[in-house]
Image (cartoon, rainbow, N blue to C red; front, side, top):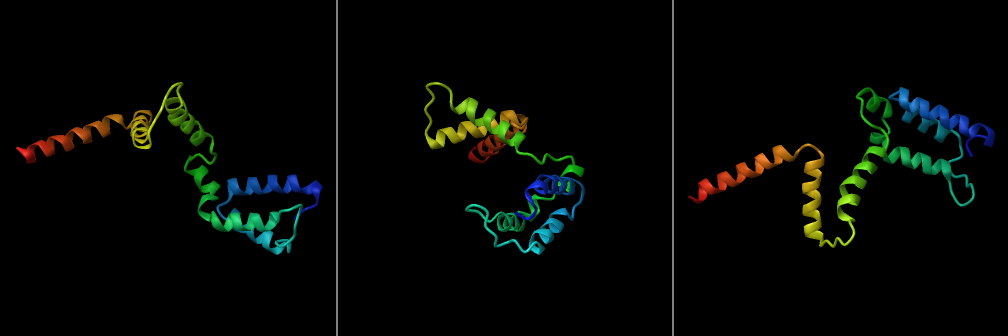
Length: 138
C-alpha cells in the first residue's frame, strides 16, 4: 500500500475531502500516487497504486467533483440507479411481461419521456411533424 495499514483510511478520507473542495485535487492526488514509487507494487493479486493512477488518467473529466458540487450537480450514482430501477425494472419486469428488443425499446423511450416531464413537448413535436407531413401530402 502507499501508506501503512493504519494511515490508509485517513489518507483516503483526506483525498475524498480534497476532491470535494479543490478543482486541482485529482492532479494533486495523481502526483502523490506517482511520486510514491509504488506504481508497480503488488498487493495480493492487484496493483492498487497502478490501478488508481490509470483510473484518474482515464476519467479526468469525471473526477472534477468540486466543480460539480459548485454547480449543484449530483456526484453519486444513486439517482441514476434509482431512475434505472423505476424506468426499466418496474415497467419491463412485470410478471408475465415479454418484450422483443424493438418493442421494448419503444416502450422504454415513451416511459422515459413520461418520467422526465418531457412528455408534453415530445407530443407537441410529434403532432407538428404529422401536421407538416399532411400538408405536404395534400
